[in-house]
Length: 101
Image (cartoon, rainbow, N blue to C red; front, side, top):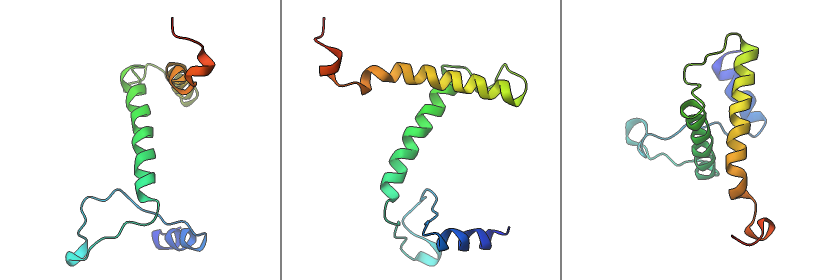
């Protein structure tokens, strides 16, 4: 499947593909207008990148100790599960946690 076919298929489905903008000026000085939802997409992209950065540094998966796809995947899932446990207290509302000690 060529690149043009893939873009047409996405457009037929109503998906607007985009990449991170490097500047506001495009080819030959034309102003680039980001599509609707671009800012939301960039915010969620930042959150996802933060998770990968944490997994790479804290869980030391930048250079994995595991061999084989299955074990690497298991190590990654374990690291992300541990990250979820670290984040869990921040996600639970204060009223559900009870009074502070």
